[in-house]
Length: 336
Image 1 (cartoon, rainbow, N blue to C red):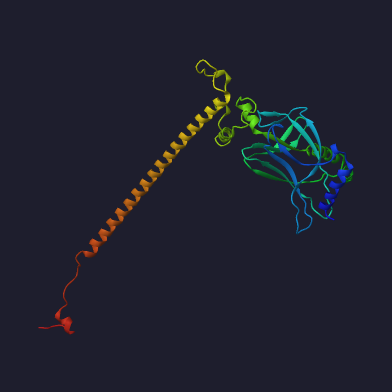
Image 2: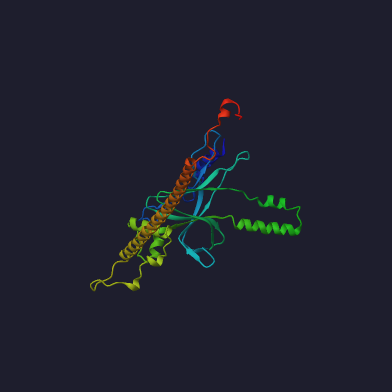
């Protein structure tokens, strides 16, 4: 019997032991704005338990006991020294009972986030520091059929009896420090996951009515590109109700159309900048090519001059050229 087999038996046993409202549920939740909206994606914690060395099991969501709190109080987390983000919404507290044999390692657990096409969300992973404070450690944008898998490392904290036995031989000062350090560990072990949907936040930042971007797929994708890739400030794209333009004495353009026109103007400016950068790059490349051709031409002219000089040197008059004497032809010298 492996830990995976024992976990499977405990799932079967819990269905008989607990009432329907307390039965452990799979940790797999759809991310949706409301019941009227389709899910943007899913978030799950999956376990891949190994039955033996040759047949690893398929990753499945872990079974947790869940307590739901429907937005009782808001929480916050810092973005920097001067910026703090407050958030509220449904909060879930999960408890997971892990079964492990002494001779086998802990199961492989991963946090998996999946986004649907033309959908996006922000996943923040950290810890719960207090009832109103969340401390994120990592964050990622999951969009357009992305699948983000983050391995989770599990570790156990000694029980109170094991802890007391371990510090029994220490001095009183060392015991006080060990107890304070254990208290810090116990307060910092609550793992937290925060999911932020992007479309509602875009609507708030751009001063748009709720659900304005639900069916505006292209506009949403253009806004995501301008914000993420080009880092365009939101003030340049948002709808300003105080500067409405009157058209034929009637009401001004709708907020969504105003934002759409701002996006089109920004894209036109970016396209013009790209064309100018391309022309600059082509002119720089042409200048480099001309300079290289000039250097090659100078080098060829120098080589041709050297060749002409060598040819003139080889075809010039030979000094010391004459006929041999008659005596040298017959092997002797003539005497009068």
